[in-house]
Image 1 (cartoon, rainbow, N blue to C red):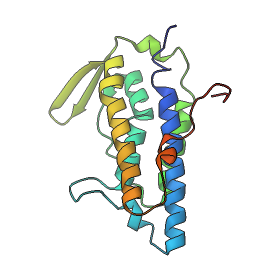
Image 2: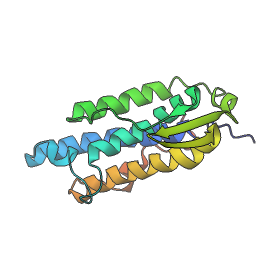
Image 3: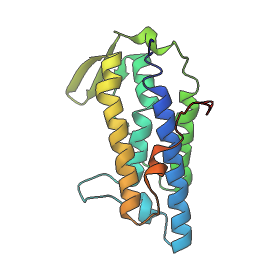
Length: 176
């Protein structure tokens, strides 16, 4: 059985983005329940030298639909956009990423196999081919930031568990 570049990336991006959407909902509900300002979670971080929850969500988006856009253009770089400052802004980022990923064709990504992708950040330039960019740069970063987002909320007391991180599994008969 042939596994396409699409099947090795996009469905998992969608699964975890769905989970991130659920985490945002639970974070907002927790703030409402506890009488917390949204910034208590949106700006929360696991350690002083780590980025906050809003950054983690931005990065999950950057390493999913942003990675697909980089493969399409051959150019990648850090997402320098501002952080969302409320739950609606976080939710919008995730929703837009899902909508963008839903437009990716099943065979589209395979057409990019072997094509160059250059990641640039200031003087740093890293040359990849599309599949290596997705598998060795974007996917690990995507999962790292999703895990940190989950960890921040868990650390802050939001009642979430592993099932919240996993999202909707693709099982036999699930139609996914």
